[in-house]
Structure formats: structure tokens, C-alpha cells
Image 1 (tube, rainbow, N blue to C red):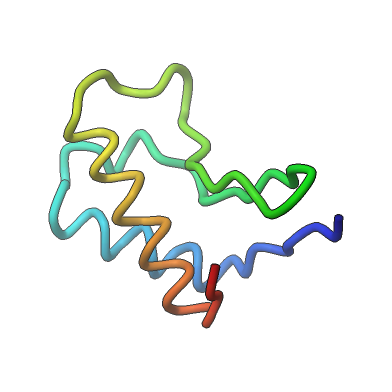
Image 2: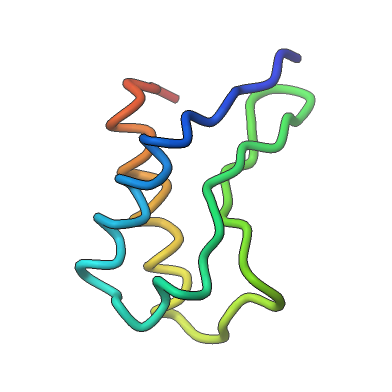
Length: 76
């Protein structure tokens, strides 16, 4: 499985887009990452320390990942 190189500028834009909806999590997120699996990738955020608890943190992560994939023209 090939790895995906995360574009730093698209990463910044994706996190900024997610922060518009969930500003309370912006300072905790480092970057979008794609971990290779046997087939495909596991998309997630890398956090500063432990991930924040709660559903809203998951929504922030999902929003950032969807934004990154859209900006990078990645189709699952």
C-alpha cells in the first residue's frame, strides 16, 4: 500500500475550515494524517496530547478530514 503525502497548505486550510464550525478544538489539532491499512487508509487527526473528549471533537475531526479530502480531490 502506498502512503499518502499530506500537503501542508491543504492541511492548514482543512483545519481552518473545521475551526470555523468548532473553534474550541482548533488549538488542540496538529494535522490530518492518513495511516495505511491493508486496503485503503485510516484518516484521523493528530492531536496535541490526548484527543479532547466528546461528540463535538469527533465532528471537528470528521469536518477537517472531509475538507482535506475535498481540497486534495481524494475520492474514497
